[in-house]
Image (cartoon, rainbow, N blue to C red; front, side, top):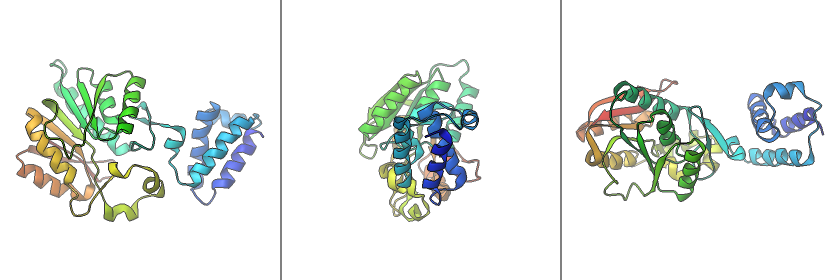
Length: 285
């Protein structure tokens, strides 16, 4: 089989399940990962011979894509904030909105820490470690820690820290049962579960079937659960004038702002993402 035939077979197998542009993207991603071919090389080498072993990898990918498994899990990695991250069933696939949260924090910190002492940062619900590692990479004076309940996620996070050549301290804990945090921090950030059960009907199959429920969903009757718990811990463990950053559910911005004000946090600021949705909130102790 040559490359042109491989592409034709791949496209015909997935036609009707995904838009044609997405199928093309899947093929390009798999070709880069499995065949070490760029998009231009794919176009220029239609007669390239594809081995049986290579063909088998594409057949396996087709089976997994038909089951709506995310392409990032199939190749085992994704890009986030210009860095490469390993991902698997224990970790969420990092979203562009979370890149915006990271950019928000980095921009804020670079304004005030140019010649200052090192700062301490805690990322709660670290998952793949994408927030913690991106902050450590871009804020070299920061001492960053990441906390998560999942051993599987923390194993991947540690691998990602090594992959990206940064030092991050990873801790296993259930934040809902955590009383004291390990120390005092200058900044606490979290992208906690915030999708309400009622919003599941709007989710794609690849998310519903494959990404970890515990990192995504909260019960309809208590959608601010993680925000309440983390905020109360932050009150005790943020240094004076320390900052708290959250990624948030666009529908809960007003409720969360009111709660943070009630808890005594100051200067709450809601920031929209590139889609115009309320997606981040920042406040001070």
